[in-house]
Structures are given as C-alpha cells and as structure tokens.
Amino acid sequence: MESKEIIFDEYLEMQFFSKELNKKIRIVLSDGLYASDEELTDEYKLKIADFINDINCWYGKSVSAVLQRAKEVYHSIQNQTVELINIFVLFEQKEKELFGLSFRVEFDIEHGCGLQIKGKNDNFEIVKIGTGDVAFC
Image (tube, rainbow, N blue to C red; front, top):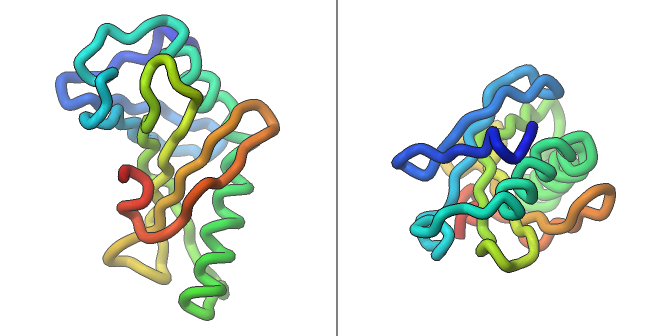
C-alpha cells in the first residue's frame, strides 16, 4: 500500500484488502486524536501504509500473543480461531507509531481480544493486551 492510498472517510475509517489474510480489514483513525481534525501529512500516511505493508512481520507475533492470553486467562487454546477485524491508529502525527489491533476470538465472543503494538520493520513490540477495548483505548 502507498501513502496516497491512505484516505479516511467522514467517519475516520477506511478499508484495505489484505492479500496475506485474504480479507478486508478496517482501519480507524481514533477520534480522540488531534490528527482526526488535521490534514494528514504524507509522512503520517506513510507510517500507516508501512504498518499495513509490514503485516507479515507483526501479524504472527500478534496472533501468538492472543493465543497465549487465551491459554493464561481462559485455560484454552485448542482449535481457537483468531480473526483480525480492525486496526486502530493511536498516535499523533509527530509521535512514534502505536496501533491497536482488534480480534474476533472464540474464547471471548462477547468482548473479543485487543492489543496495542508499536515499532516498525521487524521490531514490533506488544505493549498491552486484553479485551477488545484495549485496541482503541
């Protein structure tokens, strides 16, 4: 994905098709950010596009963390389906990247699972994990 393809609608959302996951993923720009009221710079859009393009670097690590949470909290990991639903942009234009990932999971259908992840390239770190609301708070 290129930075020029990062275009949020009036609801601060956009979608992209992930070839790696073979599905559409929704990206949401948090309305609590100043960036939601600003014209987005090319540099900011590039950070978002780079994160999307690095899906092979962060997706496996994220799913592993979700399954580890299932094991620790719910004492179950057998036949668990983990589906990425949303990516939340949680950083201001002049800040370091921080994204929230929201997953649909079988072990907590009602709340899902959410995590926050920072970094770039092959150096992604999961900062926080919990129920789905962690992804956007």
